[in-house]
Length: 267
Ligand code: SAM
Image 1: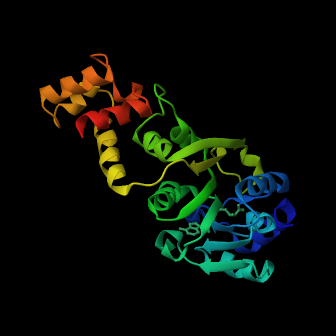
Image 2: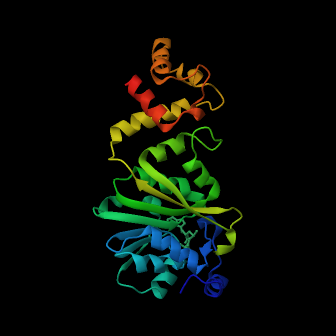
Image 3: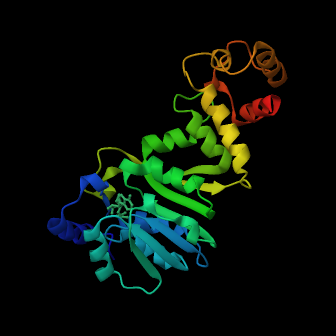
């Protein structure tokens, strides 16, 4: 059992956690087991980003067909290769951001306790990939989870929330105290999952997400102010009329369906 405080502390006494790689290791077996159980399927491969010492990897192997894990840090990679010998585990010493994901043609799950310094680029690499995903389950800073699942009207709601919620059913699986990590991070964490809800249509997405971003260009301004540099008054009148928007409405108050309706009027 890798996820326990004495083992992690012993190894980290030798290796020292590398801040530049966002290394905070999970030391609570029950939490790790619960994350892995909810994230995997016995008949599917799981991809893990940043296996570290293998706390999560060990449990992912328990609940998956097999596991491909990508680790940037050579010290972690070598230690894990030594410690977790399982023919169903393929370890890569690779920066996940540089990984070619086109080799995966089968349906997969993704699970990770993400390095917080690269959370957004890693998530966007996955979201924008051609991967056939059943479910993505990741540990992120609570603040990031709040933004991703935010609903219309809330402070955290923005273009990122809409884009992600258009593509996925977003669920906060659990909030996690910093005491389950070693070393303990300074921020609170949440496990969040993304389950695809649509057939992908990249051409539509590109145009649609551009529109959403434009509506939030100047957050404090009204929707009308953000639209007027892009469309003429006649078009803006049509949008407001057909979508039933009030005169001084802001992008932050619009639901996902409002944005879809707006897109339909414009295109
Ligand atoms: N999975 C382990 C656990 O839960 O105990 C470690 C999680 S730790 C938060 C993040 C891990 O990601 C570290 O092992 C770190 O070296 C690795 N990492 C950081 N940046 C990476 C990258 N770009 N690609 C792959 N691994 C990375």
